[in-house]
Length: 280
Image (tube, rainbow, N blue to C red; front, side, top):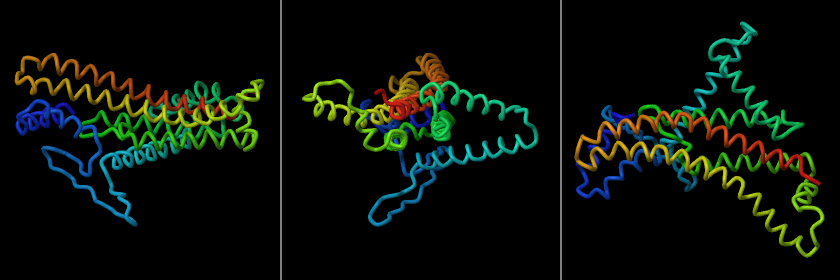
């Protein structure tokens, strides 16, 4: 990752005379693209696809989402087969079981309560998917799909659907929306509260999407900026400090990857629990 960053930084400085334009390589590393930059090995151009006037081209973030999905499928197939050989988990199987039990006992069960089993497969899916996408962005030539607002917005939309469907399944369509209005408020406040509660339904997925997107983007931006100081200042005297801080932030990013997967899953589970078990 650092060799790639240093190569890109050097190229950016050579191609730009003004330091204000030297930040372009940072955005190139973070933003989505239609090719995979594997410098110095070359660039892989991804296919461009148009269907009925819609651009559904394969991009860098799409590739890494597919990669995360493939990794998870393979890992869990291996884990499932290991249980056929022995009921005592070992190695990777033991690690995954610890995580699954944690999501079940520390996230789903306390926040949703009774009936949490119906939502547990979804919560486990988003936790492992977000965590894998976050970690893939930390490897050399990797890219963080969760730093794309379109990806996080889609994940948040899926959570939004689970929240609404879960609430309607438990309380009924009319009962669910009726339960959004607090009991005991004056009659003339009902129209105002209805609007406020309706807006509140959409602010939850918005917060989910923006929080994950912002946190995953910020860490990579800081790392690239620290390394870029070496070339922007045209001196290698700052290299030890820049690389040391970049290494520290990279290690911190591992923790952030775990925390952000946990927070997204926790909030999704909490919102589902609030919709399913409305206060009366």
